[in-house]
Image (cartoon, rainbow, N blue to C red):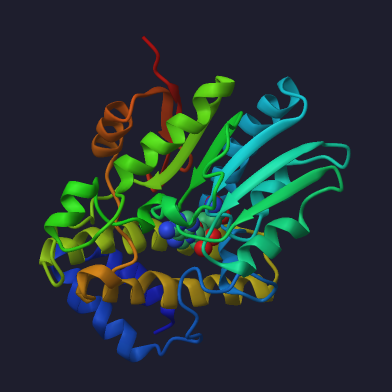
Amino acid sequence: MALEDAVRRLLELPRGEQPAEVERIRRAHPAPSAEAWNTRFGPGSLYEAWARTTVMEGLYHANAAWLRDLLDDRPGWRVLEVGGGDGTLWARTLRPDDRGEIWLVDPLPEVHARVAAHLPAGVRLVPLETGIEHPDRLGPRGLPAADAVIVSLALHHVPGADAVERDRHGLPGAGKAEVLVALRSALLPRDGEGVLNEADVFCDLALPAGDPILVDRILDSYVRRAGLSLLHDLGRRTDADDDLRAGWRALLRRWCLDQVDAARAPLADRDVYELDVPRWLALLDAAGLEVTEHAFTDRYGLFHRYRFRPRTG
Ligand SMILES: C[S@@+](CC[C@H](N)C(=O)[O-])C[C@H]1O[C@@H](n2cnc3c(N)ncnc32)[C@H](O)[C@@H]1O
């Protein structure tokens, strides 16, 4: 049975039977690539194919439209981005005559190079090569005052709602709440606005490795929603050539089905520590950020977008 048919059949099974079926499909269909999530971003990478999926296009479209309006209103703008990926957002947003500054926090040198490759001559990139949860490694200036902050699918890499929860699990340093407070401080001086994109699923530290609920939540996001969207892209997108379709098939097998392994990884190595919509709303509020709108950017209910600004008074 072809991979797509096997995944289609899997999605028809009762939820409780799906984890065993995922393992059966993984055995029957060896992964065509060993590439792990977020390890390569250049031409021919799985990320390149991921950035062309319908769910990602929906997200880039919403973010680019918001940023474009904001940049047009603020000549000499400065944007703080957390987690740059392959820079597709900037390719969709910027014009050749734009002038401004992008401060990018991302631990991977390749990401800084990819983002830089999309910038017109008048836009300066200030690379901060570290994880956002390490404020001490940002350099002497720390985070800059910014007109806009964009954090798209990056904050789920930071384990724990806050430093207290991290500490309970033996992890030092800042959690998501402390990062949001720091982003609020960056927005305050210029009366800026921010956008956060994250999947709507709970798989943070409260669920220990191997917990069946954690397996179910990971499957919910990576297979029932992302997997289904990939099946639809493979079946319906007439703009995809053979290379792109091969990339999507590899994503379905390697990034969706294999992601179940994250549920069994030691806590500190899980790499995905997502929150669902109510928890993100509570966290943004507690950080002093007013959510001015929030909605899914795709019809699979996968990625949710929160637009926010510092609450004052
Ligand atoms: C799924 S990609 C999203 C990229 C891009 N924002 C997009 O929407 O296409 C996650 C990005 O976050 C970066 N990242 C991973 N851990 C991070 C951390 N602790 N702090 C900041 N960025 C991180 C990765 O290197 C990668 O560029």
